[in-house]
Length: 395
Ligand code: FEO
Image 1 (tube, rainbow, N blue to C red):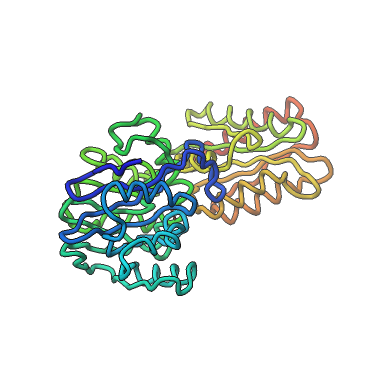
Image 2 (cartoon, rainbow, N blue to C red; image 1 turned 120 degrees about the vertical axis):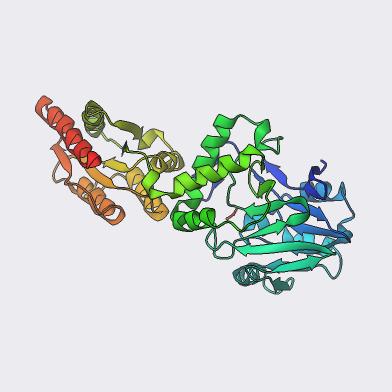
């Protein structure tokens, strides 16, 4: 397995994780890559980021196709999460005996917390640069993209911005460049990645996109998925600007529900019908058939969330609780929310859903509940409830 040269002095030496299907709760149905980059400095080599533990052999093979690992005198860690640092324990001892590891101030703390005193880490400050092996590397702190330690590294000789998690996607492929792949798949995977990883930090993304350092950028090189060049740079930046801008969230409803004996499901269809009758878009996702990370992706493109659950043991169905817990943490921009469901003794499932929605959205409407099985009148009322939601959406 050989390195891939991506610019005159820079090589991709990452690994491909074809089998990854779960990234802390996010379903990665197309696998992922852990991208790392080897830069030929004027003297020796600089490594930017590592890979996940367990992939050291592939990583080493790619590095060794370019240089003797002992020629690596500097390692820059843009982000300490284990998918990028897990290999350091085994790899650092293969590099030059005096090889230095650099990270942001929070990165130094995070690496220390992960690896103890296994190897010393030197701090690089925001807005500063280092000359490593005679070549210049600039550093930009990007706290919370996606951890407090995250930073970008810029290598001006090849005009590459190494952005770690930002602008990435979980997508395994033998192609390294965006323009070698099916763009519709990339757009979908980039949206899914943003929704499941970046959404809570949209405010930071918006500021970053508006104030990118004035570097000449010919390549954006993230640590997951494909690299961006040419028009691809504008494409991914435009996506991030749109997804991070609350005012650009489409006027669209998303209904998610679980059901016990189909009553809540029947209500879901009628509420959707009511919204559609008012000329608005509405997606429907049964939670029993949809992974939470796909629901998150859909919610990034919606401003209204409607959640259905029957009552089980005085609460909501467990799968609904799972999804609400996940969505709540991602802090989506939800302008209108509503809960609905059927019940037997008391509508406590819907009440529990509504309580969660109130924490996620200031404009949470009164719930719509039906005892046991909806009559035709109750189904008509569900359509009317859809009309009520649509009216809120149009305000
Ligand atoms: Fe790819 Fe936040 O790790």
